[in-house]
Image (tube, rainbow, N blue to C red):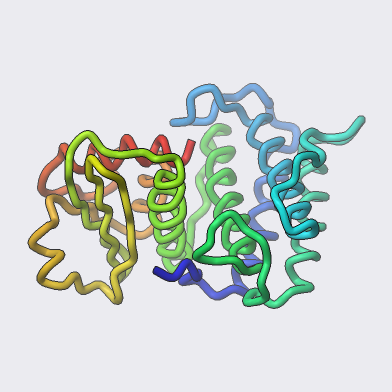
Length: 259
């Protein structure tokens, strides 16, 4: 299965820069000990520092061609969380802009070893945490374009659920297949006692062989499904049909994949 993004790569770079700026401005002057909803133990300050650190980790990985062991993980002396995020994203965007998205680059996913992987991963990392800090500060959570949310659904299912859990050797307690549909797209999420997998279905049509194996479906508006899969919205934000145990197992494993 291809790991390539469903969203335009040029726009992903714009999303990364804009979302990082919104996140940085939101945390500027905010109480850093405010808790992030639906993320036990995570605070506004920790979120900003995490995002700034991830930017620097990704930049070092791209430059060295391997997973880095050291990078700036915290703001420097007299550097605010806002400035830590902004300075990190500016350097990251500059580096990504120097390379064609299709150019080969070391990543942590064999399905997409290109600079485009990092554009996509850093964009969605930022979108999710931008929503987190807005929610923590009880501010309106900014909208997410449908096509960006659809790409985010694809990424969280195929990269985080399908790939990360497989690498970790995670298996299910029972067999079950859940179809996820949104924005004219569909995915199949398969959990068995021998392993897990998730893959994109061409278009939105699930073939007859797979239809017979589906135990449940999750549907809804793209932004809702995106946030639901990342654990930022509860089950009422989407429509769930069929075997709820299969959906609940998927949900529990999603929390393990994205923690």
